Image (tube, rainbow, N blue to C red; front, side, top):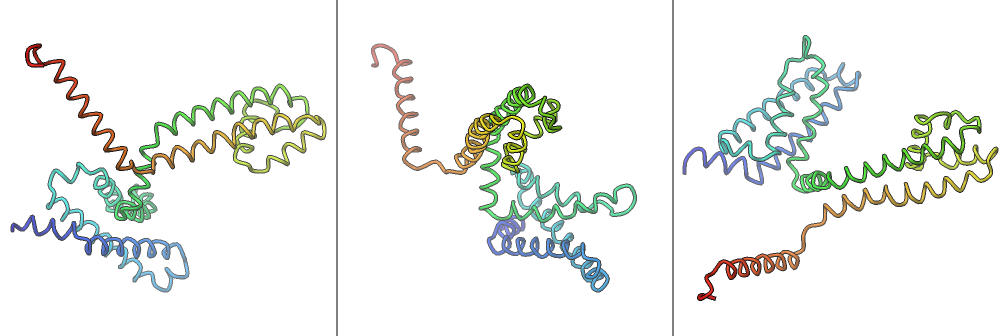
Length: 254
């Protein structure tokens, strides 16, 4: 067994992965403690030492994984994510790059790549991006149409929230999130008693339909494909191959 194989067994082992998770959690706690002036004044040297130790460990871990997997390391997007997060922390904390010091907390995000269940959630979110983009376009269209209608209906009420299209769209976005929509509606009803009709229709379409579709798309992406569905797809593919082979075969061989 070569040295590379031994290193690969260590870095891919479950115990080592658990140790990495522990270091990430401890480092995240240390970074949080450094935001407290009292803790920094009392234990500043200890916190700095723990932070540097964690950074050295992360660098050595990445070097070991690069040595063990070589070019295959970059085929996994999670490895590239870990490399980018650690690379940001390596930059000097003084001079023009001192602003990057605050980005050290990004090392806590390595917990996402280290925990398989978190990776599945993030993967599902990425998989649902096309559907979310379509729903975002639908929501923008709804805000625009509703904004134009609301400006024409409530412009003369004297309410500054409906004075122009920009303010109206912002107000409708607030209504879509459910934040204080009843106050906005009742303020308008003082001068326009039928304003509740517009708000109820907009809430039914915007909040109870479009926003729930966002949740449905994400939940649908997180559902694994069931084994019966995979078996059915495999059978369909096999039948397609047989039909294609029959079509390409000579007439006498059929």
